[in-house]
Length: 134
Image (cartoon, rainbow, N blue to C red; front, side):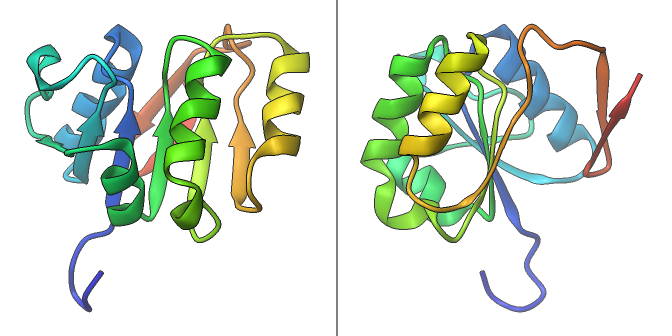
């Protein structure tokens, strides 16, 4: 990222929850790049750009939101992007069990990693780069 450029937020997974997060971030003026294993035919949410691969999305972003369908997909995405993960803030909002989240956190290459319990314990609102209770 060059000086003066807005940091890129990568949203991996354009399922309804991932697409909603991407749209909210874009509406707040964030530079958002999306990617989904189903391909570009899923469509980039309004105000976002499409990445050619998970690896490209993670390599470009400073913050990565993982919002995929299961923890198998989390492992695949992080495996593809492994060389870039360590320098990124990775937030995982994928649904699953606490055991799955802990397993992936232990397996993940060292990074600034955070998991949000899913289903979420409380509703959250994403605005202007912050996440706060609704």
